[in-house]
Image (cartoon, rainbow, N blue to C red):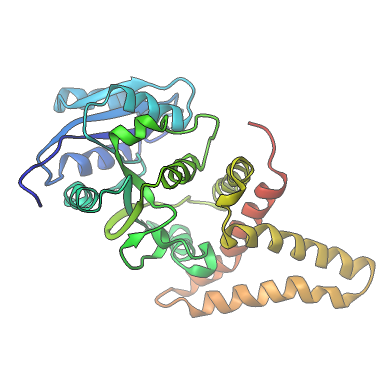
Length: 320
């Protein structure tokens, strides 16, 4: 680490995080980096005691600020936090994750060394129960999420997007921050603009952040439907940004259901299409190591839930 430690600001969008917020904030306060000048929590309306918990942190640490985010939008909350931040670098941390003690130190070393516009690492999905552990296995497999390095790792270097993000504050403001019309995928869209500005989005596999997946099928399906829906909106905004991994889920959705319908209306031969996907799911479930039988059985349904919900959202998700 260089002897010069630029001041940094932590930005955290917060909503319905009563169960996880304390651990998330504790992980920030436990950082080895000496120049975290402020920790800004942008709190959206919640259905639990999130707001009162956030307010209580101000008594324990005078670096903590709590802002109101009435819109509830992640992008708006992050932009509001960035407006009052004074750090040379803006570090996004989510309220449902925990960063290891050396995360900020490693991230600042990386962004200073590379001159990147944004630096990030791996979203390490972990689970507390059988369902979450099965989802975590799906989220760290190429069959589950494609070739996104931030899900499963890879070599350090330039990439298209990363988990969370450590941003050059000057560049962030020059680009106008996050697009507040996007409920999800606002980080990916900003990374597009960073690359268009001829700055690098840099992946460092040493930046590992623990993430707790959704805890039931309904929440998981809703999450991936939203991912697909808002990914389409980003693609419509900039068609050049689309990747092969983002085309596969909607194509899979169309072939799966068209094959099923055609097998009923025309000929059973068309079952070949959905059965091919089912067979691929079974192969993927059997090939992931160190899973208990109960987790594998859930995984048989988790993969289709993720893939088909994403594809459905991409193709047919409407509204704001």
